[in-house]
Amino acid sequence: MNILLISTNRNALPMPVMPIGACMVAEACERAGHRVTLLDLMFEREPLAAARSMARSSRPDVVGLSVRNIDNNDMRDTVFFLEDLRSIVHAVREQSSAPVVLGGAALAVMPEAILRFSGVSCSVLGDGEKVFPLLLERISEGKPFGDVPGVAYLDHVGFNSTLCPGGGGRAECGAPDYGRWVNVAAYCSQLATAPLQTKLGCAFHCVYCTYRKIEGNGQRLAEPAAVADAVKRLAASGLRDIELVDSVFNAPYDHARAVCDALAGAKHGARLQSLELNPRAFDDDLVADMERAGFVGMGLTVESASDVVLAGLRKGFTTRDVHHAADVVRRHDLPCAWIFLLGGPGETQETVRETLRFAESRTRRQDVVFFNIGIRVYPGTELESIARREGVLAASPENMLSPVFYVSPDVDAGWMMNEVRRSMGSHMNFINTDSIGLSILPSVHRIAFRLGVRPPLWRHTRFIRRTLRLAGMDV
Ligand code: B12
Image (tube, rainbow, N blue to C red):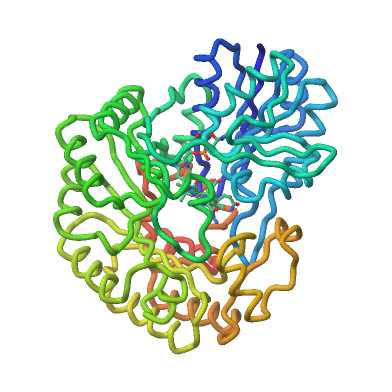
């Protein structure tokens, strides 16, 4: 069959991300014998015209739309992306009567609401490279697909879904050949990294998180040697800045170290980073391994430096681990991004002060410290139950597609924002959601790239904030 895949994500903040999922699905469709066209809307000036034109010229038998983000997770300056999806569906249907199927991370988070909102009746949940070819087989044979594992659809009865495949087994670590599918030069010129997974699944139970819903809670690990091969292949193709996009890179700990070991012996020439490390399984040996493996940046998603809040978020670690992580970071050179999430269950003015004191006294000046305030609530999460119990969430589950945020009833969001801004005033390496949502960020990326800067840009936060302030901007 002729398959048209459209990657609908056009969000270039904090930087454009390469559509790994859509590329993996494209390659899986080809392996299954289909002809595939992939349209990436990220840099299209006229996305609807591009979708219309491709839906006409590629004569698709099936159109798959990849949907990554629902919104930007920013409570203060919320951007909702799915209106655009609706327009894209409409544009495709103007030119083609082929069935439209949705897939992507957003679908795993809220399948029914997104199907209803976009007016599409069928979607794939989870691993598209496995599920979509099976679905296409049924569609080509004109057979029903309701029993294919990993689909969600609307019919005359209502919403139905089948369990995603996944669970046990190994992950394949399939690095797509990005250059075949997307404009790699355009991504690189905005300091995008090439995504790669070393595992699927998440074993943690953070109250707000959707990762288990997207990838499952059974971990599927890639062979360390396969990760090293994939990194070598990407680097050889010119994609030297590679980001490991696992839900949590250092869990399981032994697997992360084995991956680093394989990478250290691989002479790959790539610059690696991962922004998702958990402070619990974090020690000198791991960081030394990461340095040997070719990492140039890491992110610690600590969220808070208060035990009350860490327990409220069910992070599975305590402030002892957070302080230990700070000691470890200080003993190494690897640049670190500290990621905090303020306003969770149990947060008060005192716990916010505790976290800010930690950030101000225990992180290094050359590292970046990011504060997010307010937590996006997704239906079905424990945070949803907590929010309803505390009386701070009124929206029904069907009405949570349009973003709703949790803030502990014991602290005021405006007060937290002011405290963070006050701290940012004296710490040029601190940033908040306003910083990563700056409309001039794409230009900053392009200029930095031309000057020879390579990702991660956050290593230069102090310099960038100072320069923008000198230019009169309140950043
Ligand atoms: C790593 C990551 C990042 C990294 C990305 C680095 C990089 N170079 O790619 C960073 C930190 C930069 C980032 C930023 C953001 N992220 Co993010 N991120 C992730 C994470 C952890 C993994 C994404 C990933 O690469 N997965 C691996 C690939 C293989 O999976 P995939 O793309 O989903 O594709 C598979 C399936 O979805 C499916 N599929 C995909 N497309 C299609 C199409 C069809 C037709 C079919 C059938 C199937 C299919 O098959 C694919 C292969 O198995 C996810 C959470 C998660 N566990 O998924 C959040 C996630 C995707 N991010 C999310 C968000 C919100 C954001 C930000 C908006 C946050 C912010 N405020 O800045 C930005 C947006 C960036 C942008 N420009 O769009 C949300 C999106 C959904 C939502 N809730 O709105 C997620 C799901 C987390 C969450 N909160 O729930 N992110």
